[in-house]
Picture 1 (spheres, rainbow, N blue to C red):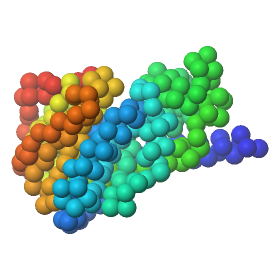
Picture 2: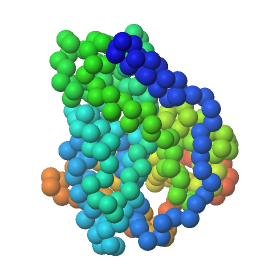
Picture 3: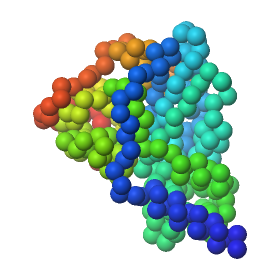
Picture 4: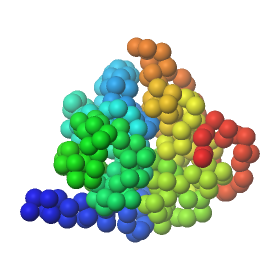
Length: 296
């Protein structure tokens, strides 16, 4: 009975995770002007880097009184060695009462949930996309990685946590999302699939939707990307060893970048830079301007 009950829960999770209902993107709201806001790029199971980044953010926020809002841009899981630790840390919530965490969903969260719920080809796809490293973090050896063992090994609280993650967070003119948005489609009509997986149409031209999109999903070679209408914070933590966060000042007019993993035991800070808001029109971008982003 326990196995059947868990399977039914996982099926409901998949139905919710892969809904085609337009995403619920809130209208613009006034930012919390008394506190800086931070956004952290794709973690991909690199819990050591995440721990360093949280410490760096706390030190940075202490300059303005210690309060901080932190948005995690999804792809918390897979590929790196510490997915279990990452999920335990983030699902427990902030240790500091002055912090607020908003954790978003990425395509790797969907892949993990789908694999656990459906088994078969979906489970094998998850293994190919980094699920092997995830299951190792839960104590399974490669030869033990079948569907039943995986469902027994992964903490149900972690599954529930992932299933409840939102796709977007909006702070006035800043829109935080894992992958991006589809140009020419109103924010209220954006597809959840696009929000976690879009690349080409979003990367190739400004979206013209009147927001600055802060995203991950498309890894760079270690540097954050600033393009008209968007900021890319996926600096390839698994491959480069660098995790990046954007630090937005209290009035949301400038951004600095904090990076851990560039030099052992050090935090590299760059900026401040003016936010790259784009005009509310769509124009083509020179492909060479995206050369640092791995779009394949």
